[in-house]
Amino acid sequence: MSLLNILQYPDPRLRTVAADVTEFGPDLVRFADDLLETMYAAPGIGLAATQVNVHERIIAVDVSDNADTPHILVNPQFTTHGELLETEEGCLSVPGFYEPVTRAERITVTAQNPMGEALQLEAEGLLAVCIQHECDHLAGKLFVDYISNLKRNRIRKKLERQQKQRA
Ligand code: QAP
Ligand code: CO
Image (cartoon, rainbow, N blue to C red):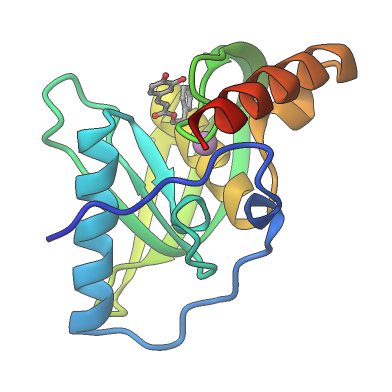
């Protein structure tokens, strides 16, 4: 297993729209394990392939307290239900910043596992929010796209300054 490098906002590669996965099997199982390991090491509750510069539709999520309930979703699709829920969201690609985002409280997800088997998942609360956030990454979208231009520009400038200092 290996840790993958996580792209940071405003890296333009985070705007790439991911392609559907068509090749399943051991290589994809290995990549999914690396994605999950990278997420746990961060530590985070969700990570999309886009964030590690792999532009295929794969996400990892685990919102459990003990980090023992991983979900790997390949080619995820969801329908929304129920009420809206406002959650303070963060993102491993936008480190140090958290802002409230409103999303559906319940979703029904269909996806495949890394071996290509179909799966369905009913999710609510933080799990539902996290899956929606990660699916946004696969479409090149970030949670900062939902906040004011003023706040987003402040975050962008702070992260750009940090990244230049490190370089
Ligand atoms: C997405 O995000 C999410 O700023 C997953 O310094 C987050 O795992 C969906 C993290 C919250 C819903 C609610 C962020 C770690 C982790 C940071 C994450 C940081 C260190 C974010
Ligand atoms: Co994110």
